[in-house]
Image (spheres, rainbow, N blue to C red):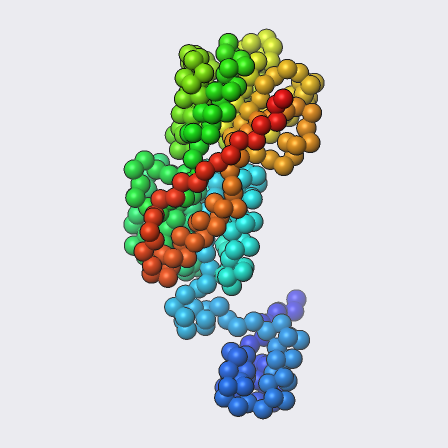
Length: 335
């Protein structure tokens, strides 16, 4: 098997018939400034393009004392919200000349520690994290070495930089409308109870019932996890327990709604009178026969705020506000 070899600046210099120092000046953009002949500059640059030469990131790290990379840690990259966030953040990094490294934790705190250690070993300049951990002690200690910004989730009373969407107020407004239409029965299908998004969205759900004058029943609150399969299983079990579909449901995330819709499709319920609402929106909801009212996060802005915050911290600036809570909007499709 032929062993591959990366093209180095020494190789380019040899091919161009110049010294390594001259090639380095040209490839670092200083050839014209230091009066390297135009013909020589063009020859070096042409050869570099032809041979796909790239400067060593390790050499750049030593020169700049930065890796020009950011680390993103998310529980699940296939989750619609995290996928949209990752795409928006990657675009921001690319425009700024940075490389984004993405790692997934599968909602496992042990795996999260491993992927974070791997990113730190690659000397990322900062971390943006949707954490599955129950406490922030690991990240508080890590923040002494590099900037850490939490997003989407938080640990109680954390003082770390944080960007989240307000979940309580818009959820309450949406659920109040739902409860006024179906005061007899409205179910909450949520993720892990220990996670802050679940707690906040449940708080909004209960507040919405209170606004509508509806007293919640304990059996209306059902917890699973945020995988679509969990949404399917919770909704299937609910239908089996009731012997019919529920009158109204609120799911705490887009992934859970995906599981519910799969069950409804398999059991010919998409044209039924079930009133459905969810936290998080999806563009495909506009194409469905069933109307789904949602709380819509501004995910691109969430990415922009995280990027701005971590960039300021990397630059050694003190942000005016370390805790940013963004508003959400209601998408009402039910007529």
